[in-house]
View 1 (spheres, rainbow, N blue to C red):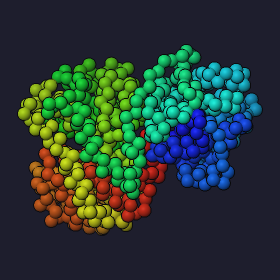
View 2: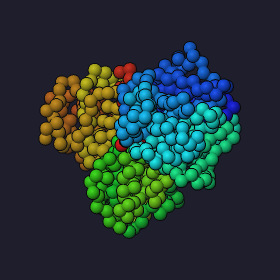
View 3: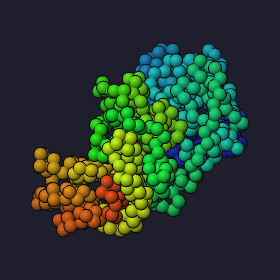
View 4: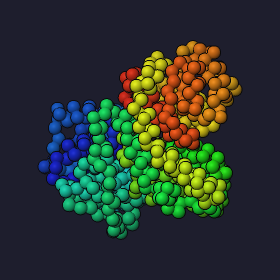
Length: 603
C-alpha cells in the first residue's frame, strides 16, 4: 500500500518524483504530495487529496524546482483522505514520507504535545516526524536521530526523510515495509518498489529491517540499527521498461492478460528440464504434508494446488489464509513444507506466516514474483515466477504463473514419492508447455466474452459456481468480478447451493457456471437448471467435452481443448476477460479499483 519516491541528483526533482509516483499508482492511494528542496535550501511542499492528476494541476499553478526531494501516494489508515493528512509531513528541520502503521502514535502524540509540538494532521506519520525532530534537535546527526527514532517506533514502516541542513541527501529506514535504493547515471533514488525507478536505474539495493540508508547523487551508504556500516551488493533489475508501460492497450489489466502466454512460457522455461520439473530441490520424497499460506488471488492458486497434490500425489494439503495462520496455533511436523505464495513478496500477513513457520522449525518455500522481496529473502528456498511487473491491481498473469508452479510442484512430488510414473509426469509437463497456445486461443476469442459481459450491465449481485477442480476457479472468477466492477459476487461449490444460497437467486441475476470436468457435467447440468428455474441468467464456461451444457445456458464460452487438469488456467483467463469487459462497460476504473491496493503491506 502507498508509494514512496525520493530523488537527489542532477535532474529536476519534481519531474522525477512525479514519474516515480505515477509508476507506483497501482499500489493504491487516495492523496499525493511532494517536498522539494529549492536552490536556497528551502523546502517547498505541495500535496492534495485525490489522484496524481490533482497534484500535477497544483504544481502547474505553483511550480516547485530543485534537485532533491521526496514524494508520496497515501492510502488512508489514520485520518480520512484530505489535503492536511496527505504526505509529506514535517517541521522546520525535516520532512518525512511514510508507508505502514506506527502503532504507538497516540502515546507519541501525547508525549510530544506536552513538549510543545502542535499537530496539523490526524496521521501517525506526523507523530513519527515530530519524534524524529525532537531527537534531531538534541543530536544534529541524522543517522543518530534515525537510530534513536527506530528504537522508539512500534509497528511496520518505511520512512523517507530529508533534513534541511543536509540539502543534497535523502535518508531512508525500513521495518517491515519494503524500501529500495537505486543509483542511476544522474542521481540516487529511494522507492517502495522497482517500477518507480525502472526508467532511471538498473541496479538497486533492498533494505533489510532496521537498516538505514544515506543516499546522495553519486552513491549510497548503508548502516545497521546500531550504526555500523553495512556492505550491500546491488541486485540487477532484469525487467524491461516496456513491461511497466501500457504499450497501446487501454488498460494495464488488458495488457497483462495478453502477456500471460509469455509469462507461462518463461516460467516453465525456468523450471522444466528435459521434459520434467526441476524445482531446485525445494521438494523431495520425504515431504509428507504441505501447508500453503497465501491471501486473495494467491490463496485461490493454493486451493488449485491442494486439489492437484491430493489427487496426483495423495498427500494431505492444508490451505490457510495467511492472516489467520499465525493465530491458529498451527501444528507443523519435520517432514512438512510450508509454502508461501505471494505476487509481491511483501504481503505483511504472508511474511508473518513465514516467520512463524520458521520459528516452529518448518522448512519454508516461497512462490514469489519479485526477486529480492521480503518473502523471497526469508524463506528457505524461493521459487521465482516470471510474470514480470504486474501493474493493474487485479492480478492476472501473476495468478497464472502461480498455477504453473502448483502443477510443477505436484508433478515433482508425485515423482519423488512414487505416486506418478515418469510417463504420466511427462504427459502433464508436455500439456503445460502447450498451454500458452491454448491461452492465446482463448484471448483471440474475446469477442464472445464481451457479449457475455453485457449480462452484467445492470447486475447488482452474481454467483459463480463450480465443482471439483472448478470450485477454486469459481472463487477466483468471483473475486476478479467484484474487485473491479463492484458487483456483489459470491462463489459456491455448486452442490452447496441448495443448502441456503439458492434463496438469494432473483430474476435476471447472472450465475456463471464453470464446467470443465467431464465426469461432473451431469451434476452441473442439474445445478444450472436449478438456478435457471428461479429466473437466473446462466452463463457457461465449458470445454469441448462439456460443451453440450450450452443448451442450458443463456450465453456460453467454450474453452480451448487441453488436458482436463489444466483447465483452471484457461478458465482463469476467460474469467479475467469477463470481469475486464464488464468493468469497462460499467465505466469503472479498471486498473485502480476503489479502496484496493496492489500490495497489502500492513496487517
